[in-house]
Image (cartoon, rainbow, N blue to C red):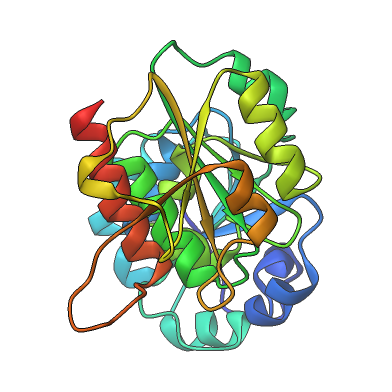
Length: 265
């Protein structure tokens, strides 16, 4: 049964207090999942353990089937909208929050070696925008990418906003970090991946690309793009555009590229 919370200072819901501020400083190996769609995705993932839920009272009935899947020992707190807003620090229009535990990220070598003979991996280099990272994970889940590799400058896929934008894709697609973009290419090549880099100056056009059995796609930040030394080491690919326009949003680019590769592999 849901546990009613009427006091914003109730110590039992400390983990939910001032969500935005804690987004900036971290949550000691935990993350926040927000919204009904994301919660339902989270409930299907065995690699994450849910610690608790905080729900607006008006959402209990519509979530009854999902709540039935939650282990009895996981507390489900319910509050009215005013109390919930006071706890969290801003209006939560979805009225659904969960705290879950992170799992240790695997070594890149282990993640890559465990993939099938036909595999598709995304490498993110210098992406500091959570909306873009969330959008890329959404596309990765939609088009069946096997994993995402992150360099040290790329932001956290389990940041609350990134998870929300990914519509839970960040909870579905495996990911790990590598020490540098150069190390990322080396690990991919060692695992027999052909490394393809997206750039407006790419030597090949995407429509003519036939992917290898194991293909990795590198994406860089909008503006600076991928470093020249990385482009020199990889197969470079561009997406032709009209009217002299030379760039797309990186999340949009990922969707176009992943769709092409998944349909032509």
